[in-house]
Image 1 (cartoon, helix red, strand yellow):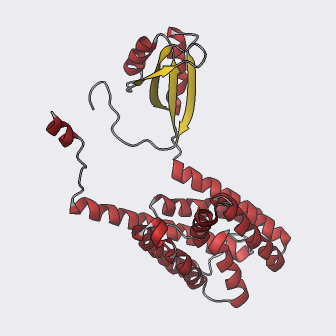
Image 2 (cartoon, rainbow, N blue to C red):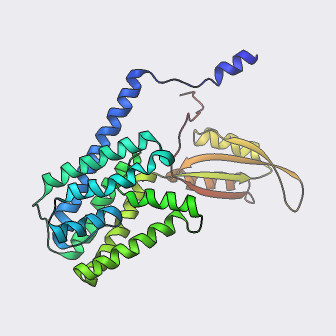
Length: 297
C-alpha cells in the first residue's frame, strides 16, 4: 500500500523534448513581448516625450539628453540591476531577463523613426495599452524589463521598512519629477497616465481575461447542493469540515471553482435547494491542475 501511494505522488519528470519546447515557447513569447514594447515606445511615447516608469523611463530621458541609442541605454542601465537578481530570483530568471532586454534593444532600432500620432491623449492611451501588453507578455514568461523592480525587492527584504510597491512608487515619483523638469509638467502627467494604463493592462495579461470564481457554500443541505453542482454544471466539488464560531456546531463547507458565466446559474441552483445557504465568492486569476468531471474527461 505504501509503495502504491509513493508511486502516485512521484514527481512527473519532463522529457528533454518537453524542456526544449518550453524554452523555445518562452523565448518566442518574450521576443514578441519585446517587439510589442518597442513599438509602443518608439511609435507612440518617445516622439511625444511621454515616458514609462522605472529603468525604461530613465533611459528615455537619457536618450533625450544625449541622443544615444535608446535600446543600448536600456540594456546598459538594466544590466547591473539584473545581476542583483542572481541570489533572489535565480539564474533562469536572470538569463531570460537579459534575453528580453537584448531583444528590446534590437526591436527599438527596428521601430526607430516611426511615428503614429502627435495627439497626446491617443499616444498616452494606446501607447500605454500596447506597452502593458508587451511587458505583461514578458512577465508572464518569467522575465522582466525593469531593474527598479529588482532593486525594490532587494531593498524591501534588506531594510523591511517599505513594501515593494511603496518602494516602486517612491522611485517612480522621482523619475516623473525628473520628467516634469525635462519635458514639462503636462508631459509628466501624461506619463503618469500612461504608467497607470500600462499597469492595468499588465494585470489583465498576467491574470487572464477569463477569470474564474471560487465559491464556498455553507449549508445543511451540502450533499444535495454538491450533487446538483456536479450534475448541472459538470464540475467537481470538495467537502471540508468546519465549525461555527457562535454555534460551535460542526458544519460541512462545499467548495468549487466555476467560470464567471456559470455564477448566476450556480446561485440559482443553491438557492433553489437552500434559500438560507451562506455563499462566499472570490476571484480566481489562475487555475492549474486536473479538473475532474463526471464523464472522467
